[in-house]
Each structure stands twice: as structure tokens, then as C-alpha cells.
Picture 1 (spheres, one colour):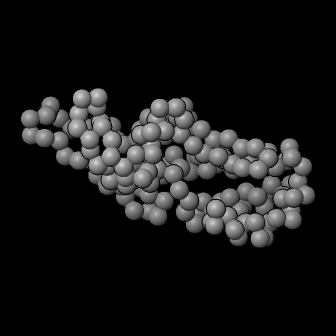
Picture 2: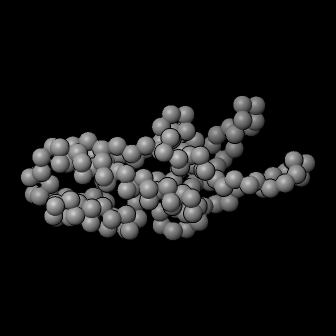
Length: 149
């Protein structure tokens, strides 16, 4: 939570003056905007710091012919699996259901079995969710905009 320390210092008094309903509207708005930004970043296959994701592992020679046409995490970034919510105290963007495990494996670079009968594979770290300076500025501008209304 260190990345939110500047927000707390500058805007703590103003946020405390908001009603609970006002804070809820603000956090829901922040969560929705953050989800949009995260979805766009995942679509462009980049980490929060701007570096590209590690490419997929090449398939063995005797695998089926053709190339993989779908990009990584195409379904994972949809609104069905990537939920945005907010309450009086927090804005949350998270993966839900069974895809949470897949997202955690890629986010942290853990080992997992791609199929039921396949061997365990080490996945490279691909940060799906995270904050960049641009997102921090966007959240700050949303708070200021909401407080000015």
C-alpha cells in the first residue's frame, strides 16, 4: 500500500469529509477506470512498467500444424472474469472464479500443469495487474474531479 501514501497525505482531509455514498461512487468509478486501463494494457501484452510479456514457449516439432492465432489472456481480460468493485473504503479490480488460479500463476511466475495429464511447467512472470505512474495520475485526477463537483 506504499503507492497510495501520497494520496493519503494530500487528500485525507477532503476524502474524510465525503459522505459514505460519495466515497462509494468515487471508488466504483476508480475501479471501473482501472479495469479499463488494465484490460487495454493486457491486450497490448505489456507489464505495468511497459516491458513486453515473455513470449509463449515454442511448440514441439510434432505438434499440430499452424500458429496460435489468439493472443495470450484474450478471455481472461473480459468483464466476465475481471471484476471491478468499490465500497466506502476500497476500489478493487480482481479476477474471479477459476481464472484466479491461472492469473496468479502468470502474475507470480509459478509452476502449474497446463493439462490434467501433462507435466508441471514453470511459467515466466507476466504481470497482469499492477500500477504504473500513469494509473496513479489517473486515480489522482479522478479524485480531484470528483471532489470539485
